[in-house]
Image 1 (cartoon, rainbow, N blue to C red):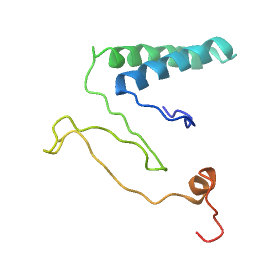
Image 2 (cartoon, helix red, strand yellow):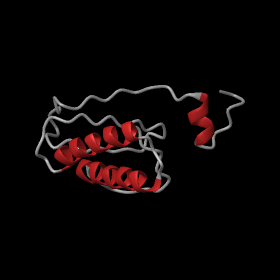
Image 3 (spheres, one colour):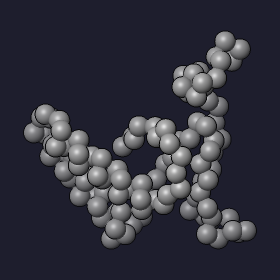
Image 4 (cartoon, helix red, strand yellow):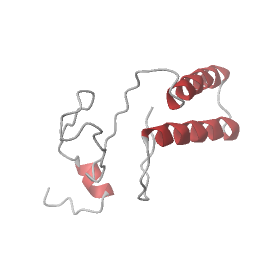
Amino acid sequence: MTLPPNKRSEITTIESILLRSKEDLHESLKNNDMGEEHVTKMKAFLEKLDLYSTGVKFPVTLKLTDPSGNSNIKNPFAPSLDKHMEIRYFKRSLNELKEMGYSIENA
């Protein structure tokens, strides 16, 4: 699942991200005229999301892509490494640079 970029700053938890995603997807079910197959798949996904967001089902993998580099995920084991967390750095695409307001002429 891919969520659209959020233009506002916020401090949140993984639980909150999952719950908000569930609410947003639930709203899209109400407001869209999707085919029956799509609705069935969406409802099954929402059921899984509910299990993950309430902590009933584990493990869950959450991948965050943050081209701006402003995400800050706290490591509960600091200063030791968290064996469940992987950080990868990447080069921004021209489109990501443009969306962030950078001049792409010199990129």
